[in-house]
Length: 68
Image (cartoon, rainbow, N blue to C red; front, side):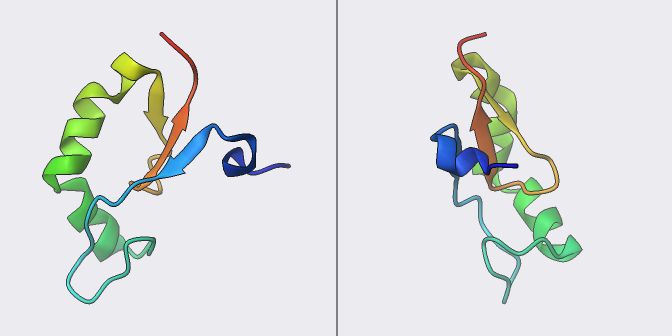
């Protein structure tokens, strides 16, 4: 059970935060705010073109699966 961050295949990206929230908070209000952020929406629409996918519970967490 090894974090994908340790393998070099995962990255946490700043996709905003709810007012008063931390960028890595999994509170519902924070995840909702992040899911409406333009950076997150761009990632959802384009990341797979570069071999990345999102761990949905953490909008900031993206992993590289390789070239599609």
